[in-house]
Image (cartoon, rainbow, N blue to C red; front, side, top):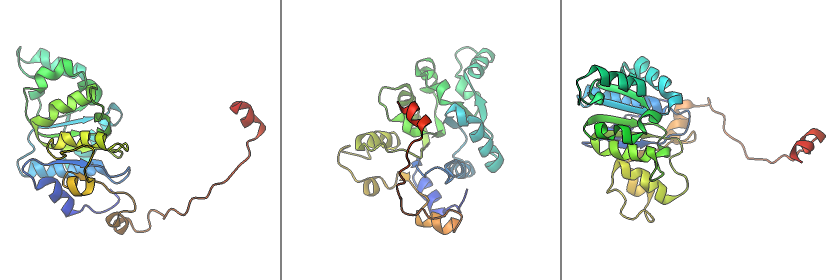
Length: 240
């Protein structure tokens, strides 16, 4: 993490009885570490016994490694074959998601909500983490159906995305509704900072607390200047 953790940030995510927050810092500012800090604090307070982490397959191993090496939070990695193995080992009718208390699963495994819905609807989590949560915006998608199943069945819900807003206010309101369905009365008319400030954190590399922490490690970006370069003969042929 390139700058010091802010105590106020942790307080924001934990001050409510059911901590639910969108961590939307840009790439490189340590969203995984912020998630780890929050989960570690929930565990310390006795509110993180059952944890489910859902990530894209491409970052699953890295996410698991970060939470273990930096915060000593062990997560059992499961895929569809692992879930089937558990189902063969436990008595018929038992929920395979109760076999381990803290698990990390690829969204591509769980998004088959038709296969796992009856199990996921019968389990309550202390904390659910969903990475790359901008993929949850599309209504009717498998990922969205998964999120809608998990969101009401967890006390703490942590969503993470460097690009949570696609420019459409309704889409962003739709994402926020997973955290708090009552937060936005009119999805076409709301102020993100004023109405939703308690539900999300977003920092860029020029945010004051980031700049104060990193000093000169990131150089300031100067004014943009367009440079016109004529294409060579080979480039013109490719273009044609």
